[in-house]
Length: 252
Image 1: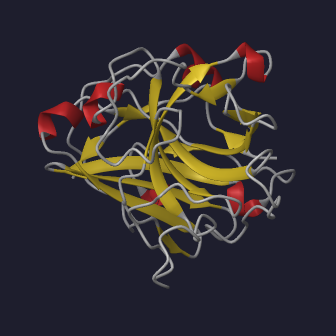
Image 2: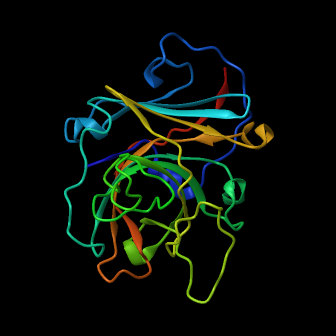
């Protein structure tokens, strides 16, 4: 079981909030930051996916996304399925209020989310060698980052989300580092940093004004590739719902 701090808000859409300037409350963990989204421990969740706090702040055009977990960030990874069909995916997710076009996708109404993810059955970062062994296509199990666009998709189950599919015969705009899958996904190469209970991603934006009203949420989630490897290609299959909560990105 995984944790969604506010899945109901995520499905409804993340609202933008004015970007205030605040100081850290003390310490570098998300749990210690003023304005962080907090969540109580849940004994039914793998502690490595049990979010205690999610926080996002920025300094100029560089935005830091981080979470504090009850357990050890990144210590649990999915077991290999042996094939792309039905392949499991595990993720730490920051849904945002940013428009998909902010990072190079075709414009639309989906939810742009930053994801740190692991999936041993396939590699979707063809420009990057996460394990440094000289092979660009064998390290999907290593934690890496994506931008994805999430949309409600009843084909995945009632009230469920999926990564937005690219319909056959269409050619929507994709970021330069799109890995070529038929979904709204980008592989930008931002490296997740795992330190004990903390996971951190630092993301640079070309125009800092685009993130001045950024709002966010925090989710841990399991997804799965469709057994038939067609739309809907990648569905959310496990995420627990907690009372709605949302916070704005803050500049430090």
